[in-house]
Length: 358
Ligand SMILES: *Cc1c(COP(=O)(O)O)cnc(C)c1O
Image (cartoon, rainbow, N blue to C red; front, side):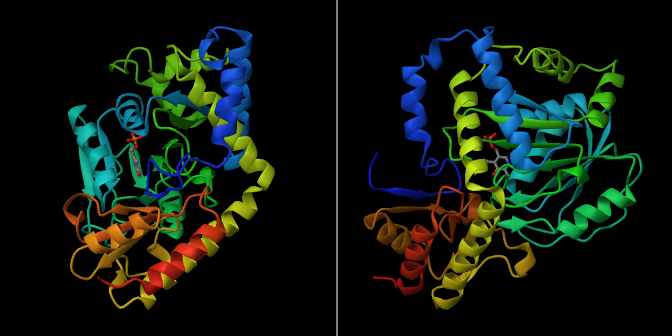
């Protein structure tokens, strides 16, 4: 591997143990084994059980594999919503879900305070079968209020709640009992090659899907089909076997290190990054309120444009993320994922404090 460290918010720097696990996978012929073999079933069962421990999921929750989080948006639209859904949207990823829901002919209600702006909890009509929340909006560096999630659960017990945890799990503690379904892609906080999504679904959501008998729920990746296969520790299609293997290994490494320690490290490194941004007169945090500042994706506005900064850091071997969409040249986005060590972030923060336009 090169000496460059990727602080981009996904794909990002690989988790430090991935290289060794890849070598082992080659030695064990993992890419050649049958997805109907007992060897694969063992990998499936190990990976799902490590993820359950890492995320603190009860037995009510099942784990399925998809190609990406984007796929899960379509699967939720087809399997968990008959007509109406409600979406908290203050950035591009949450918005993409609403587009997919619309393409699936759903009636979508959107709470949109503006890009990266905090939400107000206004009344949600009871006809909405599902409430969609993006826990960490990667495009804006915004973290959803935990108390808001608790309030939603209490106030709308009849609705399913779907939580996008793509760029945040397992780096921070999340109470999954507050939601019925959640999903992530492995190229963010797990530090793995892209091309694998993890879909978490509880009993209640599975029951809802089972009752939507009149609508098209997708073919091979309908919830029913995923559930039937998962009971055999299999997938309906030939899956990303190598990806599932690597995910299990990395989840196991994270458990060995200790999830509480990982959560503490994330908080510590995140505080360093925001402090550095606040101390540099050329930078300022994009998100105003500190409770809404993402712990895993720190976004700073750069005075002028960001090119000088990105170039300086690239020369020093650090690849930082540019802004998202229309903020491409105005923001920098710095990933703070479990693979980024305390030492690396301490060093990066010192550089960030000191950097000046050429
Ligand atoms: C990256 C990201 C996605 C999409 O992930 P894919 O792997 O491209 O499907 C969805 N939501 C959030 C918050 C993300 O950061």
